Length: 465
Image (tube, rainbow, N blue to C red):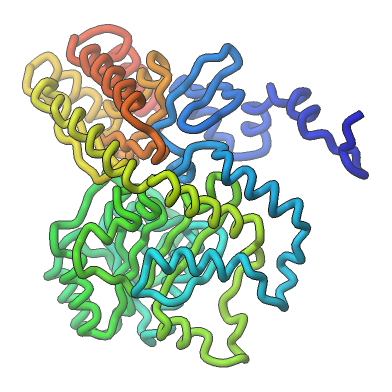
């Protein structure tokens, strides 16, 4: 007989008895708009299991994951090495989170991360990407004695109040004011940066080396020149690598694509978790940390209740070990180049396809206004209802017809973002390009179910105004 412990809790039995209620439970007790949105798009699937870059439904159909849980599943789902590390750390019954000792795992994970960031010296562990950003904002303000942080238009750095203050999308900010007195500049605009720095109150510039919203990269040389300007005005450069870090763009960090860039603070999270245990990390220079933690009286001036917990640290160590053993960064570069090149070759073939861009396995596919009259009239109808509907029209048949999960890159954007697990290879590239080509053929045929669905989206968008 199975021993379920002293409480008799049986997880498998609970899921078997009530798993079919998943959408009703969410509608009743959680964000009620999520199941509504999923049902509207036909995304209300029931996935039974997952492994690597694939899901399976109850009928045994496989689905290719080109979303990776918004980048969390860098190694795919249920990597055996990460899974075993979590079994091992649980079985070890460590004296975790006593708060008044120094366990070895946090120090070992910090050591491993800093080996990839040799110009930085120390790490603070939290529980998420937004918490890593919050830490960087606090540390930059305290270390410089200045109040204001600059960020880039259309940036995304998280949704807690501090990180929301440096979020470049109004849709996330609306209704949550007052926020911190931070200032946006256009991505890549050095003149705007100079103007703001002359005011003398800037603590830092926080920037994504590749923006998640729309998959935009700054112009060549921008990060290096921005770093020089910031340091000249005794301000810091913060690199938000929450989504781009740990190999996503074909280098360990995305800022490493530009020679000479050495951020003062670096934020990582997502893939470091192995997809199991939330973890965030803020890496920084010794001088910054020593300003914040300047005396024993300030030893807990910044902390996190679950930061540095053994399960998260074990997952992070396992992830870095797998990345080294399986050469994940090189695979992301190689496979990303292949996927991007094959998609870019389609731009001249399809008038609705405007551009393919990105780095490594972070790829943006942008759609734009067609030239032919028939397609142009339909495009105009969609744009009048709500910008971004055409990209949604592409995402839906990719899932419904071809069993490939993708996402629209942001609200009111005609961009699909691909951020698959970093372990995919040529078979997954073939599957995606074949499916995407079929969807584009359907879209350019001028009829069929795809445009019928477009009309449904238009009615939904008008009704929501």
